[in-house]
Image 1 (cartoon, one colour):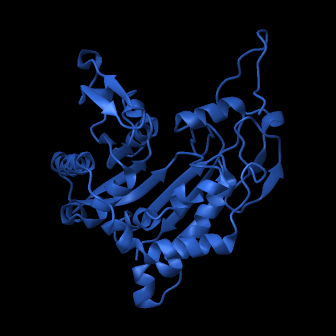
Image 2 (cartoon, helix red, strand yellow):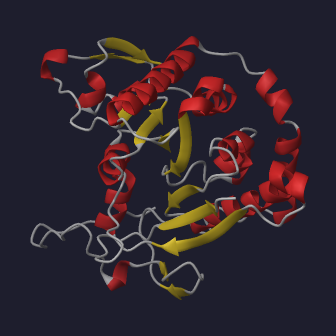
Image 3 (cartoon, helix red, strand yellow):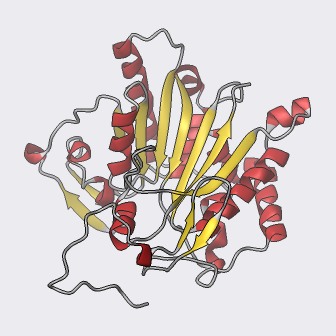
Length: 329
Protein backbone atom coordinates (compact mmCIF):
# COMPACT_ATOMS: atom_id res chain seq x y z
CA UNK A 1 0.00 0.00 0.00
CA UNK A 2 1.49 3.34 -1.07
CA UNK A 3 2.42 5.78 1.66
CA UNK A 4 1.84 9.53 1.57
CA UNK A 5 5.09 11.51 1.35
CA UNK A 6 5.68 15.21 2.01
CA UNK A 7 8.26 17.15 0.00
CA UNK A 8 10.93 19.10 1.85
CA UNK A 9 9.45 22.44 0.78
CA UNK A 10 5.92 21.55 1.78
CA UNK A 11 4.94 23.14 5.12
CA UNK A 12 4.02 20.77 7.92
CA UNK A 13 0.29 20.74 8.57
CA UNK A 14 -0.94 21.40 12.10
CA UNK A 15 -2.40 18.39 13.84
CA UNK A 16 -6.16 18.38 13.89
CA UNK A 17 -6.59 20.17 10.53
CA UNK A 18 -8.01 17.83 7.89
CA UNK A 19 -7.75 18.63 4.20
CA UNK A 20 -10.86 17.90 2.19
CA UNK A 21 -8.79 16.08 -0.43
CA UNK A 22 -7.65 13.57 2.19
CA UNK A 23 -11.01 12.63 3.67
CA UNK A 24 -12.28 9.12 3.00
CA UNK A 25 -15.87 9.36 4.24
CA UNK A 26 -17.81 11.47 6.73
CA UNK A 27 -20.65 10.68 9.07
CA UNK A 28 -21.82 13.96 10.58
CA UNK A 29 -23.64 12.46 13.52
CA UNK A 30 -25.13 9.26 14.87
CA UNK A 31 -27.80 9.09 12.15
CA UNK A 32 -25.35 7.47 9.73
CA UNK A 33 -25.42 10.09 6.95
CA UNK A 34 -22.24 9.68 4.89
CA UNK A 35 -20.40 11.56 2.15
CA UNK A 36 -17.84 9.92 -0.12
CA UNK A 37 -14.26 11.10 0.40
CA UNK A 38 -10.77 9.80 -0.31
CA UNK A 39 -8.71 7.28 1.64
CA UNK A 40 -5.33 7.35 3.37
CA UNK A 41 -2.69 4.69 4.01
CA UNK A 42 -4.51 3.77 7.25
CA UNK A 43 -7.96 3.21 5.74
CA UNK A 44 -9.73 -0.09 6.37
CA UNK A 45 -12.88 -0.52 4.31
CA UNK A 46 -14.96 -3.37 2.91
CA UNK A 47 -12.41 -4.04 0.17
CA UNK A 48 -9.67 -4.52 2.77
CA UNK A 49 -11.83 -6.64 5.11
CA UNK A 50 -15.25 -7.71 3.80
CA UNK A 51 -18.19 -7.53 6.23
CA UNK A 52 -19.04 -10.63 8.25
CA UNK A 53 -22.22 -12.44 7.33
CA UNK A 54 -24.78 -11.06 9.77
CA UNK A 55 -26.38 -14.43 10.55
CA UNK A 56 -22.97 -15.97 11.13
CA UNK A 57 -21.99 -13.16 13.48
CA UNK A 58 -25.23 -13.32 15.46
CA UNK A 59 -24.96 -17.09 15.87
CA UNK A 60 -21.36 -16.76 17.04
CA UNK A 61 -22.16 -14.12 19.67
CA UNK A 62 -25.16 -16.12 20.90
CA UNK A 63 -22.94 -19.19 21.23
CA UNK A 64 -20.41 -17.23 23.31
CA UNK A 65 -23.19 -16.00 25.61
CA UNK A 66 -24.54 -19.51 26.15
CA UNK A 67 -21.10 -21.08 26.72
CA UNK A 68 -19.68 -18.35 28.97
CA UNK A 69 -19.61 -20.51 32.16
CA UNK A 70 -17.59 -23.15 30.33
CA UNK A 71 -15.19 -20.52 28.97
CA UNK A 72 -14.60 -18.99 32.40
CA UNK A 73 -14.10 -22.38 34.04
CA UNK A 74 -11.53 -23.41 31.43
CA UNK A 75 -9.24 -20.43 32.06
CA UNK A 76 -6.53 -20.75 34.74
CA UNK A 77 -5.79 -17.70 36.86
CA UNK A 78 -2.45 -15.98 36.25
CA UNK A 79 -0.86 -14.62 39.42
CA UNK A 80 0.15 -11.28 37.90
CA UNK A 81 -3.43 -10.66 36.74
CA UNK A 82 -4.77 -11.31 40.23
CA UNK A 83 -2.13 -9.02 41.75
CA UNK A 84 -3.07 -6.25 39.29
CA UNK A 85 -6.74 -6.57 40.21
CA UNK A 86 -5.96 -6.49 43.94
CA UNK A 87 -3.89 -3.34 43.39
CA UNK A 88 -6.82 -1.74 41.57
CA UNK A 89 -9.22 -2.67 44.34
CA UNK A 90 -6.91 -1.15 46.97
CA UNK A 91 -6.53 1.97 44.82
CA UNK A 92 -10.33 2.37 44.60
CA UNK A 93 -10.73 1.96 48.35
CA UNK A 94 -7.99 4.51 49.07
CA UNK A 95 -9.57 6.96 46.63
CA UNK A 96 -12.89 6.57 48.40
CA UNK A 97 -11.34 7.40 51.78
CA UNK A 98 -9.43 10.41 50.43
CA UNK A 99 -12.45 11.87 48.63
CA UNK A 100 -14.69 11.45 51.68
CA UNK A 101 -17.62 11.23 49.33
CA UNK A 102 -21.15 10.36 50.37
CA UNK A 103 -21.44 7.96 47.43
CA UNK A 104 -21.62 4.33 48.49
CA UNK A 105 -19.43 3.20 45.60
CA UNK A 106 -16.62 4.86 43.68
CA UNK A 107 -17.35 5.54 40.01
CA UNK A 108 -14.75 3.79 37.87
CA UNK A 109 -13.81 4.25 34.22
CA UNK A 110 -12.01 1.33 32.56
CA UNK A 111 -9.65 2.01 29.65
CA UNK A 112 -9.04 -1.47 28.28
CA UNK A 113 -6.09 -1.91 25.95
CA UNK A 114 -4.78 1.53 26.95
CA UNK A 115 -1.37 1.11 25.28
CA UNK A 116 0.93 3.87 26.50
CA UNK A 117 -1.76 5.31 28.77
CA UNK A 118 -2.29 8.56 26.87
CA UNK A 119 -6.06 8.03 26.78
CA UNK A 120 -6.12 7.03 30.46
CA UNK A 121 -4.59 10.33 31.54
CA UNK A 122 -6.85 12.35 29.25
CA UNK A 123 -9.84 10.64 30.87
CA UNK A 124 -8.37 11.19 34.33
CA UNK A 125 -8.17 14.92 33.70
CA UNK A 126 -11.67 15.03 32.24
CA UNK A 127 -13.30 13.03 35.06
CA UNK A 128 -11.51 14.00 38.33
CA UNK A 129 -14.28 12.51 40.48
CA UNK A 130 -13.84 9.05 38.97
CA UNK A 131 -11.08 6.49 39.26
CA UNK A 132 -9.68 5.83 35.78
CA UNK A 133 -7.90 2.49 35.34
CA UNK A 134 -5.85 1.83 32.20
CA UNK A 135 -5.14 -1.83 31.48
CA UNK A 136 -2.73 -3.29 28.94
CA UNK A 137 -0.85 -6.58 28.77
CA UNK A 138 2.35 -5.08 27.36
CA UNK A 139 4.99 -3.73 29.70
CA UNK A 140 6.80 -2.24 26.70
CA UNK A 141 3.85 0.01 25.90
CA UNK A 142 2.97 0.90 29.48
CA UNK A 143 6.57 1.73 30.39
CA UNK A 144 6.54 4.71 28.05
CA UNK A 145 4.66 6.48 30.84
CA UNK A 146 6.94 7.68 33.65
CA UNK A 147 4.07 7.29 36.09
CA UNK A 148 3.99 3.58 35.36
CA UNK A 149 7.79 3.19 35.41
CA UNK A 150 7.85 4.67 38.90
CA UNK A 151 6.40 1.51 40.42
CA UNK A 152 8.43 -0.99 38.34
CA UNK A 153 12.10 -1.84 38.14
CA UNK A 154 13.11 -4.54 35.69
CA UNK A 155 10.45 -6.84 34.32
CA UNK A 156 10.11 -9.14 31.35
CA UNK A 157 7.50 -8.27 28.72
CA UNK A 158 5.93 -11.55 27.66
CA UNK A 159 4.52 -10.04 24.47
CA UNK A 160 7.72 -8.43 23.23
CA UNK A 161 10.02 -11.14 24.75
CA UNK A 162 12.34 -8.42 25.97
CA UNK A 163 13.42 -7.14 29.34
CA UNK A 164 12.51 -3.56 30.22
CA UNK A 165 15.07 -1.88 32.48
CA UNK A 166 13.64 1.04 34.40
CA UNK A 167 15.56 3.86 36.07
CA UNK A 168 13.32 4.99 38.92
CA UNK A 169 15.48 8.04 39.56
CA UNK A 170 14.29 9.50 36.25
CA UNK A 171 10.64 8.72 36.88
CA UNK A 172 7.89 10.86 38.31
CA UNK A 173 4.87 10.27 40.46
CA UNK A 174 1.54 10.91 38.82
CA UNK A 175 0.00 14.30 39.49
CA UNK A 176 -3.41 12.73 38.84
CA UNK A 177 -4.47 10.96 42.00
CA UNK A 178 -7.38 9.25 40.26
CA UNK A 179 -5.39 7.43 37.54
CA UNK A 180 -3.90 3.94 37.72
CA UNK A 181 -2.05 2.03 34.97
CA UNK A 182 -1.95 -1.75 35.25
CA UNK A 183 -0.36 -4.58 33.37
CA UNK A 184 -2.93 -7.37 33.05
CA UNK A 185 -4.72 -9.58 30.56
CA UNK A 186 -8.04 -7.93 29.79
CA UNK A 187 -10.48 -10.82 29.86
CA UNK A 188 -9.17 -12.13 33.18
CA UNK A 189 -9.24 -8.67 34.72
CA UNK A 190 -12.85 -8.25 33.56
CA UNK A 191 -13.68 -11.58 35.16
CA UNK A 192 -12.25 -10.48 38.51
CA UNK A 193 -14.35 -7.30 38.39
CA UNK A 194 -17.50 -9.32 37.87
CA UNK A 195 -16.89 -12.04 40.43
CA UNK A 196 -15.28 -10.08 43.27
CA UNK A 197 -17.73 -9.19 46.10
CA UNK A 198 -15.30 -6.50 47.30
CA UNK A 199 -15.27 -4.85 43.88
CA UNK A 200 -19.04 -4.91 43.71
CA UNK A 201 -19.19 -3.32 47.15
CA UNK A 202 -16.74 -0.47 46.60
CA UNK A 203 -16.76 0.19 42.82
CA UNK A 204 -19.24 0.77 40.03
CA UNK A 205 -18.02 0.95 36.43
CA UNK A 206 -19.84 3.83 34.78
CA UNK A 207 -17.81 3.94 31.53
CA UNK A 208 -15.72 1.41 29.66
CA UNK A 209 -13.46 2.56 26.79
CA UNK A 210 -12.12 0.38 23.97
CA UNK A 211 -9.87 2.63 21.92
CA UNK A 212 -7.58 0.17 20.12
CA UNK A 213 -8.80 1.10 16.64
CA UNK A 214 -8.54 -1.91 14.33
CA UNK A 215 -8.04 -5.27 15.99
CA UNK A 216 -7.52 -8.08 13.50
CA UNK A 217 -8.82 -6.65 10.19
CA UNK A 218 -8.77 -10.06 8.51
CA UNK A 219 -11.78 -12.31 8.07
CA UNK A 220 -9.78 -15.27 9.39
CA UNK A 221 -9.27 -13.45 12.72
CA UNK A 222 -12.92 -12.65 13.36
CA UNK A 223 -13.02 -14.53 16.68
CA UNK A 224 -10.09 -12.44 17.97
CA UNK A 225 -12.07 -9.20 17.79
CA UNK A 226 -13.71 -8.00 21.02
CA UNK A 227 -17.30 -8.45 19.85
CA UNK A 228 -16.75 -11.96 18.42
CA UNK A 229 -14.47 -13.22 21.20
CA UNK A 230 -15.70 -15.72 23.82
CA UNK A 231 -15.07 -13.00 26.45
CA UNK A 232 -17.52 -10.53 24.87
CA UNK A 233 -20.17 -11.30 27.54
CA UNK A 234 -17.61 -10.48 30.24
CA UNK A 235 -17.01 -7.11 28.58
CA UNK A 236 -20.71 -6.27 28.72
CA UNK A 237 -20.97 -7.49 32.31
CA UNK A 238 -18.19 -5.21 33.58
CA UNK A 239 -20.53 -2.23 33.38
CA UNK A 240 -21.97 -2.51 36.85
CA UNK A 241 -25.44 -3.68 37.75
CA UNK A 242 -28.42 -2.95 35.58
CA UNK A 243 -29.93 -0.41 37.99
CA UNK A 244 -27.22 2.13 37.08
CA UNK A 245 -26.58 4.12 33.93
CA UNK A 246 -23.44 3.12 32.04
CA UNK A 247 -21.64 3.66 28.74
CA UNK A 248 -19.40 1.61 26.51
CA UNK A 249 -17.34 3.77 24.14
CA UNK A 250 -15.58 2.17 21.16
CA UNK A 251 -13.52 4.23 18.70
CA UNK A 252 -11.90 3.17 15.43
CA UNK A 253 -11.06 4.27 11.90
CA UNK A 254 -12.76 1.08 10.70
CA UNK A 255 -16.49 1.70 10.42
CA UNK A 256 -17.23 -1.91 9.56
CA UNK A 257 -15.72 -3.00 12.87
CA UNK A 258 -17.96 -0.60 14.79
CA UNK A 259 -21.06 -1.64 12.86
CA UNK A 260 -20.45 -5.30 13.65
CA UNK A 261 -19.79 -4.39 17.29
CA UNK A 262 -23.26 -2.84 17.36
CA UNK A 263 -24.78 -6.04 15.96
CA UNK A 264 -23.12 -8.01 18.76
CA UNK A 265 -24.62 -5.65 21.37
CA UNK A 266 -28.08 -6.26 19.93
CA UNK A 267 -27.52 -10.01 20.33
CA UNK A 268 -26.48 -9.38 23.93
CA UNK A 269 -29.72 -7.47 24.47
CA UNK A 270 -31.69 -10.45 23.22
CA UNK A 271 -29.85 -13.31 24.92
CA UNK A 272 -27.59 -11.88 27.60
CA UNK A 273 -29.57 -9.31 29.54
CA UNK A 274 -30.81 -10.73 32.83
CA UNK A 275 -33.27 -7.86 33.26
CA UNK A 276 -34.85 -8.55 29.90
CA UNK A 277 -35.15 -12.23 30.76
CA UNK A 278 -36.81 -11.45 34.11
CA UNK A 279 -39.04 -8.55 33.15
CA UNK A 280 -39.68 -9.17 29.47
CA UNK A 281 -38.65 -5.61 28.60
CA UNK A 282 -37.17 -4.31 25.35
CA UNK A 283 -33.53 -3.66 24.69
CA UNK A 284 -31.48 -2.66 27.71
CA UNK A 285 -28.57 -1.24 25.70
CA UNK A 286 -29.02 1.47 23.08
CA UNK A 287 -26.52 1.53 20.23
CA UNK A 288 -25.65 4.95 18.78
CA UNK A 289 -23.43 5.33 15.77
CA UNK A 290 -20.87 4.95 14.48
CA UNK A 291 -20.50 8.71 14.17
CA UNK A 292 -17.64 10.63 12.63
CA UNK A 293 -15.34 12.41 15.10
CA UNK A 294 -14.01 15.84 14.20
CA UNK A 295 -10.56 16.39 15.76
CA UNK A 296 -10.35 19.40 18.07
CA UNK A 297 -14.01 20.19 17.48
CA UNK A 298 -14.92 23.40 19.33
CA UNK A 299 -18.23 21.98 20.49
CA UNK A 300 -17.37 18.43 21.59
CA UNK A 301 -13.72 19.10 22.41
CA UNK A 302 -12.70 15.87 20.70
CA UNK A 303 -8.96 15.23 20.61
CA UNK A 304 -6.70 12.40 19.52
CA UNK A 305 -7.00 10.23 22.63
CA UNK A 306 -4.50 7.60 21.50
CA UNK A 307 -1.27 7.56 19.52
CA UNK A 308 -3.22 5.89 16.73
CA UNK A 309 -5.69 8.77 16.57
CA UNK A 310 -2.84 11.30 16.51
CA UNK A 311 -1.48 9.54 13.44
CA UNK A 312 -4.92 9.55 11.83
CA UNK A 313 -5.29 13.27 12.44
CA UNK A 314 -1.89 13.94 10.89
CA UNK A 315 -2.72 11.86 7.80
CA UNK A 316 -6.30 13.09 7.43
CA UNK A 317 -7.77 9.67 8.19
CA UNK A 318 -11.35 9.58 9.40
CA UNK A 319 -12.16 7.87 12.70
CA UNK A 320 -15.45 7.14 14.39
CA UNK A 321 -17.14 6.42 17.70
CA UNK A 322 -19.74 3.85 18.70
CA UNK A 323 -21.62 4.77 21.87
CA UNK A 324 -23.50 2.04 23.72
CA UNK A 325 -25.67 3.34 26.55
CA UNK A 326 -27.80 1.89 29.31
CA UNK A 327 -30.22 4.18 31.09
CA UNK A 328 -30.71 4.04 34.82
CA UNK A 329 -33.42 1.54 35.68
